[in-house]
Length: 232
Ligand SMILES: NC(=O)c1ccc[n+]([C@@H]2O[C@H](COP(=O)([O-])OP(=O)(O)OC[C@H]3O[C@@H](n4cnc5c(N)ncnc54)[C@H](OP(=O)(O)O)[C@@H]3O)[C@@H](O)[C@H]2O)c1
Image (cartoon, protein in one colour):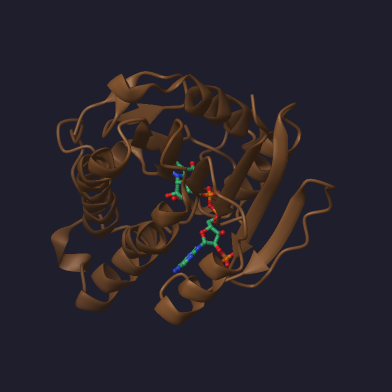
């Protein structure tokens, strides 16, 4: 089997960075291209680090043109959770826009510029980190309006991409991932004493296993770290 080329976005985040190393240490890897807004420097012979602004299409286009190989896998690990609303009274238009800018729009724009880099004639995968709380069916607690909505919208984008990609490559698989509750900058403010959290490395190991196992039957769906399906 030919060695794999993988692009990972959000590589300065806890899970993004751990995903870069997990992928770079795989046996059959040619390149991991790691993208972040401020530029990271992940020290590994298989990792090439690049800087990109996820909301700037010129920047994304330049980033895509800088990749001179075809890709097998694209993983998006970008997101933010900031002061989630306990009640609709706490919602503001700016907050709503911020959550969509962090959790929804980057994946859509990355897809616009990076799906064309995926192979057309072999199995390819495009995965983005969603969250269990983006599931409408699984929402039993309410609240967190803007974050939940931004992840539900992300799930819809992934479903649409899965349909569009199939027309180009029947072996293309697009899906969402829930990483579990992981110790990171994002989850820090919500962590409770005495509760255990996954390390980013543990979550990344599980997520890569899930990604490796995906087949065309899994197209357009959302999977948790333990490979269970999360309903829309
Ligand atoms: N941690 C958890 O328990 C948990 C649970 C469910 C889902 N998730 C999802 O997993 C993903 C990774 O989260 P994490 O825990 O690794 O968080 P993290 O350590 O805070 O990393 C988040 C990443 O997203 C980027 N980012 C943050 N705000 C952004 C914005 N406004 N616009 C564009 N990029 C932004 C950051 O880039 P910079 O470094 O450039 O700021 C960073 O690379 C997110 O999508 C999150 O929703 C996490």
